[in-house]
Image (tube, rainbow over all chains, first blue to last red; front, top):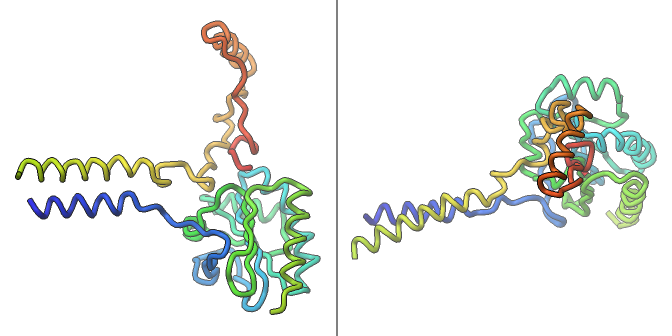
Length: 164
Length: 77
């Protein structure tokens, strides 16, 4: 009888436990140990990291790639590393998209969706800006054209202005 | 006393089972919406069928519109 009671109590506590998602100020999971495929995970120590979660079936993601390419071109030499992470379930869809878009930044594949489940993105696409200390500085859910582009650039400029 | 404890245990177990539906694991997450972008999931893929359905909805329920989906059909944005 007592065992049934404690079992029910444990079940209640574990079932109602909310899954933690990454918020501003949290430490972003390390890309090197996230099981990403499709390329080499770039070195990010001491650099500002921009992680963009995308998928081949997501139209706003397609629209964001040229803008992200320009951001990569403008900020890569200033200590900013931009990495695209695909959450496609099908590797063929991921490969076809990368082949067609030919992004100038690393476009890796979270095949097991391990990283995206740990982060719990609020929308597709979602861009995370991570500071030199490895903590999330801002989260941009969705892509809204020039507005998002300007926001990203403004935040990157502010982070670059901070002393390392 | 024994029946009260059993009732309490059953109540806790039932709460646990129901609360599982309230967690995010029961929802379609943003990265799981690939199927929603399939052509067969588009409600407007057949104009004639759409016009017929709109007529029925209006005739029966006086309901119009409200069928849009943001972000290319997958609710991305």
